[in-house]
Structure formats: C-alpha cells, structure tokens
Image (cartoon, rainbow, N blue to C red; front, side, top):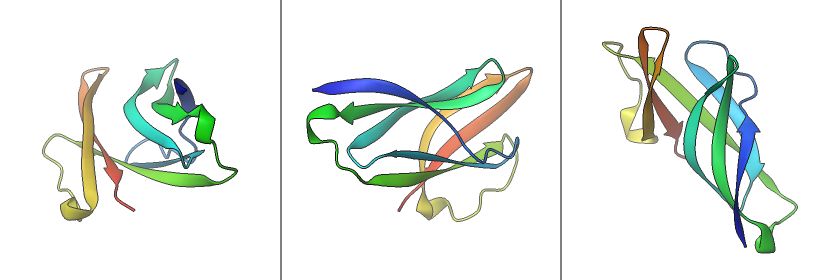
Length: 93
C-alpha cells in the first residue's frame, strides 16, 4: 500500500541546503514549512519497506540567485515565505 508520510528536514541550515533521511521505497512529492520547520511529504510503499534508507539532499535558491550544478538538480516547487520566494530542488543521486 502507498501512504503519504511527513518527514522533518534535518541539517537544514536556514538558507540553502538541507537533508532528510527517507525509506528507499519513497518518492518526495512536496516540501513546505509548518510552524517554522521545513518538512517533506513523500509517498512510501509500505508493502515493500526495506530496512535501508536514503539521504535526500535539498537545495534552496532565492529569486535572482545563481544556481550551482543545475544539471544535478530536479526542481520540486517554489515556496513563498514572509515576502521571500524560494525555489526548491532535490539533488539527483
């Protein structure tokens, strides 16, 4: 069965990068802030949950900011927070 779970982004430095550990059988579908914490939502195949996990690296860029290694990133979404606009990418593994 596929279930959507919410995961706190660890090692989020408040600006440009973050990391979240997810089951290998997961697929990130969204990211956003709740009560000043950054979370990702992922679809997890609970019938094929391996005992292994994967680290998903997140990079966040503001409008007008240069993007490093764009060919290694997959766009996820744009987030509006307190007047700022942030563009969120997942680093391809």
